[in-house]
Image 1: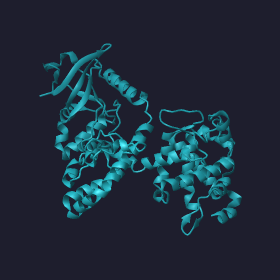
Image 2 (image 1 turned 45 degrees about the vertical axis):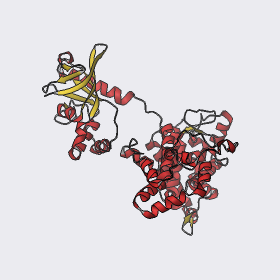
Image 3 (image 1 turned 120 degrees about the vertical axis):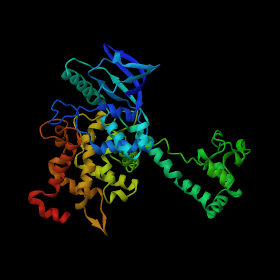
Image 4 (image 1 turned 180 degrees about the horizontal axis):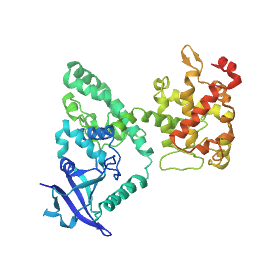
Length: 463
């Protein structure tokens, strides 16, 4: 029995397609990858990265959703000859080989997950089957490689700043309701929990709970009751507490959404981001809003590009990842980390004021990259790299403007305006805008600071 695809035929120009869905296990049985190897030097696919595939498989096994279609190709048969077994269902005979053009990691992940979770192989996977055939196998392979290149090289990554803010909100809601979830468990399983419920929901507390709207929306009996009108409270004095909340512990427990996160399954790489990204977004907001911050008003917020903004929220958030994963910053509050960074940026501004003056004058950054993506990534890298050398008092680092200025000034020309120009030999702008470039710039500045030739004696005093 061949691969059954439920779908429809269509064509683009002269190429025939079938778009639909099929069982994951059936696709795996009849497809293969044109992977490069010494035995297959004409292959165009790289070797599957098992870690990446395994992450996807685990994600699907935990009820994650993957709406993106697998792209397959038939090289050596005519799609018009494929048997239609019923309305909108086709069967591809066993003898027809399907070549995986896009989706090899997803399919490999499903194969791995299927070892311990056989039901994964029965789920339906979206699939697009195309017919780039040729009497010459090499030409068919070249056509596939072209599509592979187009898919993986021309699609533009979408900025994730709005999604990041949504995840921040979700994380805050999760923390807000963690205690409620614990209470819910205790109420059901512990007599002391039931007593706690009765105390919280006692008569004397009811009025304040209604007025302060402290009951989560999903735990209100009537979710359509409007927000409490504080300016005209008499209008809502007649609202009964029982309209808002459950007054019986069992009723409350049964109403609690056990599947609150069921449809929010995230791949493990995004789960790792949630460990630091919500904090990074909040710190970015502080750096952009505090009146004493040199970066105030310079961050482009989602769907907004006012004059004077020079870097994106995505860049600022990304630049804070290492800071948030490095001691002692990982244990500091968000306001404390923001204050440390503001002090560092103040020191930078005193040593290199020209880029800041340019933005104030032109409302944009043209001649310098200090307030663009390059500088936004480099300065936090300097904080992390210099931290072991900064003085301490009672075991606590001293992160004052003067200390930062004292250290950064030892970088000499590397902390002066000419180095931070957008273009020119040896300037920060000439190194490019990738992470390797940012790391290289930061390393050069740190090296200059901690190994400044004739001045090493003075450095010992500083340290």
